[in-house]
Structure formats: C-alpha cells, structure tokens
Amino acid sequence: MKPIVTVTNLFPDAALEKLAPHCDLRTNQTETPPTRAGLLQAAAESQALITYLSDPIDREVIESAKDLKIIANYGAGYNNIDIACASARGIWVTNTPGVLHETTADLTWAMILAAARRIVPADAYTRAGKFKGWGAKMFLGADVHGKTLGVVGCGEIGRAVARRASGFNMRVLYHQRTRLSEKIERELRLEFVSLEDLLKRSDYVSLHVPLTKVTRYLVAGKELALMKPSAFLIHTGRGKVLDDGALVAALKGRRLAGAALDVYENEPALSPGMEELENLLLLPHIGSASTETRDRMAFLAADNVLEALAGKKPRSLVPSWGS
Image (tube, rainbow, N blue to C red):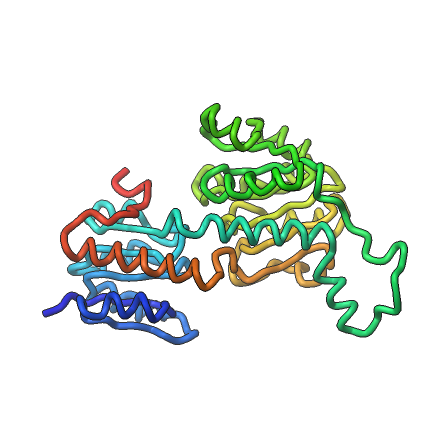
C-alpha cells in the first residue's frame, strides 16, 4: 500500500503531480479550511501532512497520529505546530525557508512606499471621481529616500529588505538577539543597535522576527511610544509580535504617521478600529504571494515529504525540532 499523504488546503497542481505517483494523495482543493475533526482524522490516517500556518497542529492532533512521519508546513512559519510534541514522538516538522524571502522583501518595500506616499487612499480618491487637477497640498506624504530604516529581525527576509534600502540611500539600523558578522554588516551597511535605540531613531520600522516566547508582543504600547510621530511601522512577520490594539491607539492619536500590516494579532480577524484608519494599510497575508514563489514553496514541501517517506532526513527541518 502507498503511504497516505493529506494536503489540508489548496496546493499548486504541479506539486501535487510530483507527489501523486508515490502516495495515496488526499487533497482539499477548496477555499474551505479543514475542520477540527478533519485534522484529527487526517493525522490519525496519514503518514504525511502538508499543512497551512492556519492549521492548529497542537498536541491533541499530533497524539492522534498512529503512523505520521512528517508535518510539512507550506510556509516559512511554523508556530501553528507543537514542535516539542512532534519532536518527542519522532515526527519530522519542516517549513519552506530560502525560497520566499526575496518576494516577501518586495512586498515589504511595496508597503513602505504605499504607506509613505498614501497610495491606497489616493487611488480610492481618483476612482471616486474626486480628482479635479493637480493640487499643491493634495495627498502629501513622506519621503523614503535618505531616511533611516530600522529592521527588527535580520534573517533572510530582514537582510533582503535591508539590501533594497541601499537603492534609496537609507541608513539601516537592525536589532536581533544575535549580532551578524562584521562581513555581512559591512556588505549591507548595517548598524547593530538595541531595540529601544532602533525605535527612537528610525523613520521606518519593519518587523521580521519569528514568533517565540521572547518575541510575543515584542512591540506594544511602550515600544510604540518610543517611535517618532513622523515614523511608519511595517509588519510582515508574525501577528502576535505586535500588539494591534496599541497600534490602533497610536495611529488614532497621531502618535505615529502610519503603518502597514500583512499579518494580524488574531488573524484573520482585524482588531477593532483598524478598518476605519486611513493611515493604516491592511493586506491579507500575501507576503509570499507570487506565482513563482508559491510554486517553489510547494515543491520544497513536496520534497520534504518524499524524503521523509523514503526514510531520509528532510532537507528543511525546522531549527527548533529536536531541541
């Protein structure tokens, strides 16, 4: 009998075709996410699960597994999975690093520019037929070139964001737990600073840390209060790194010039008041959403599954597995 591989959500056809000859493939090619009962059943029956970040693969789901070899998350994040429980049961957990950072950095820069130059409200204004001609004070925004960018979390995505800043002649500050090598700092023209210093000095702050016990609500009311009233906050990391309620309060009080979010504290729900704010750009978690990148992510997830089913160590085991 072929091993059962369950794909919990929509998945690119080409990657499904790669998997199909090697397994009993069970897919959910709809817009409807799996139910709790569906996840439990899939874990109990499958040798491999390909999951979304929105699938809660917790202890109960993992302990329902009888012969599960691998949980392959279709994305760079994996905070939806109880890694310790999976590791204790010898179940591989993988993600898709190394294939989406450039695309996510592209989106981050689109968000920076859109927030600074008020692109979305200007578009809505024009579509509504309100544009009657050039105006000296119409939709005044903020410059990006020559300003200071603060990158919180300088992993693959953070470094890709920082690299693009050179084209805007920006000073780039960064903060994370472990300092980068002098070589990387020199190449990217980075200055290592404390989080407090970064927040105080930056005109644009971009969040790229993973969600851990240390980074949960890393930026909340106290941290937002350190930022310049003229500054912008950009968030493409993990929702609960930021206190969304505190951000809404800061934006309403004009203690920040603006913000742009691609992820949310209680995703997919928005925090109260968000949709009313013109100085807040809201995107539906599309950081890696290019056709090419989503295909690369899917092929990597499929490769991880095939390697695990063949008894090999998967190529992109999450860093915290086994710790």
